[in-house]
Image 1 (cartoon, each protein chain N blue to C red):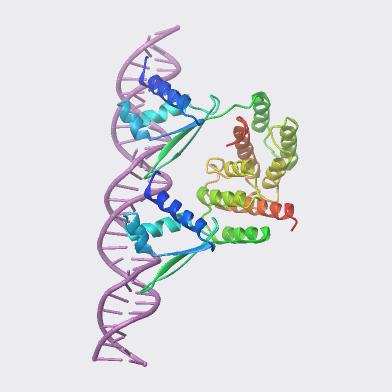
Image 2 (cartoon, rainbow over the protein chains, first blue to last red; image 1 turned 135 degrees about the vertical axis):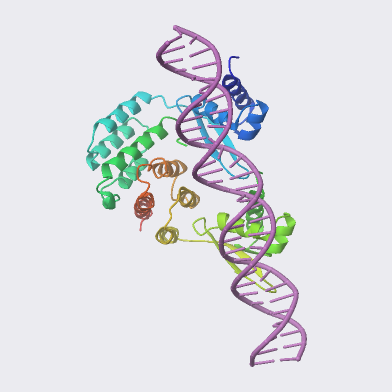
Length: 158
Length: 158
DNA sequence: CACCCTCTGACCATCTTTGACTTTTGACTA
DNA sequence: TAGTCAAAAGTCAAAGATGGTCAGAGGGTG
């Protein structure tokens, strides 16, 4: 194997495969020690090899008893719908309630979001909910909708 | 288990579950001795794990015959849950990710929100999603969470 | 040679553990 | 009754334990 990152990647994938559950919990320091590298190397491996697009979710906790949890997830098959909607989000400067609604309806039609979930998001992003952020309304909507799209990239969100 | 705080948390929740009543009374010193930690560790566990938004009430008395009483709040009406959480929203000035998470978990426990919906809202309100609104983060969270509660009130026939 | 990965380490953020010091309470005593 | 004392529990800040970030150095490949 060429480099240590590849080795660590293979190791983690092996452990993941052998574990019954579809997730593993590691201690950054332990892995770093095992492969005699600096701890931040582990972050590098995770950031480059265990991304959402590749079907992995990573959570972690700092402090005493900290850990890094890597989870295998199933990617949603309608990635193209998501990318086209993300494009819309970047092109449109005025993300009005109407536009938000259209996007959410589309997601429901594509069966990527349930009716109830769409309602929920719609209300959170409504003019009323953001009435104290008139200035940043569009920006907030864009960020939150983009966050939503990222979540929908894999099934069972979260 | 990762750390002593988690262990103590689990222990207390177990005792709480096994007790007939919905409350337990402990002696701080006893618990500290049982888990071989300093007494103030117990305060830490209580302050971080048995908070109001998580649905616990804690009372205590010092001096001879002192105690700490932990009560699981039993709310019979969904309305009560929502009002008490709305109160938390108004009282807490720093609506951190952690607090948002606690509230959402609570709503799921009370079966007012589905797991996936909670995940969704959590991510929409995350530090990352609001990274361009560092100043207004808490305000936006408050407004959107209040909007969510209003919606849930409506759903539950309020 | 240029460019793209990798690797490293200094510095940061967050959560936990510990202990010194404070406050409250009730019993005992003058 | 007031004062004293010991037995709780509370507070807070420092230290400890992890993980995260980022920019720059290092190295391999077209």
